Image (cartoon, rainbow, N blue to C red):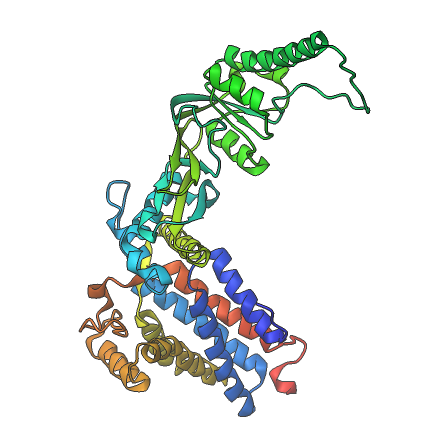
Length: 459
């Protein structure tokens, strides 16, 4: 976003920070910060010093975070029982354009995260998950590839389209005769000279192909192109090849297959070959689009989520949605505590903060009460967006929570007929919700421009 206002820039940074740390809840954190700022303005109009407001907000956020710990629930999952993770990722995708395919996309995200996760250390490296997209097909064609996809095809149409137990030579040297560094000119005045030149050139190609065959390579992936003669020779010598592969993709292939990038044919050895269980070329429908799938790689658990869609906008939106789902699954592996959604956690925190305000004798209790009112803003926004009466709906749910002492009641956005979010299976990660409250509070304190030199007594 191109934003000029300084406070608006802080809001953008706030959303970016939530996305970087948690990966989800970027809208909620901005709504929360906006509501807390609005309450701060009212307190300033009443003559309360910014330091008192900041102190009160700090206390209130601490109470809210502790209360979230109190109402959070743990749930078990494992490599064989992924249903709880899928159920958690689905609400993340419900608010996106891709919500009609939320179940299959949630399953893909969970399987991708579990493929690269270290469950013993509770750690997930999302860099091992590559998200690629290609225009065409429909969203339902999105698939998880246990390996790497490259937007290239075999250099010759008659080369094999499927190679099992592939030994891959990864080259950055071109399949062509060496060229002098200086300017040169070759005069050919007889057929014999031309034949000699052609034979010499063919010998170069022969030697290059033979070096690859000698080390046991069954597939060549080259950063540069090669002419028709080299291509023809590779096909006849039964050595499939892929050309014009980018440097970044080449590095990914090398990491995944455990191979080494070779800059000269003389340095090619069997130890430098990458290994993959299956390399296949896949074509899409009636179009000429083809892609290379490198699967079951030797040294890596790297996976690729391959997205299909009707246009570029759909693919970009799906990538963003998948990223949120991946982050939610990662957060649950790091900390498997959850709180219930639909505004239920915020309402419960609001009740707890409101009750705690009376215990503080100072001016900060006004700020604590204001924070409790701000926590209701998420529930009000949900009710408004669902076409419900916001104040009436919030009052009914709040009274139901207090009456039944049940923190799981929230806004029934989908008109299911029950306010119990546990029955509706609407929940989100505890660390995501706590981060929202903490970040929103920190940003508001920055905006208040507090100077520690000024004390409330000087005001």
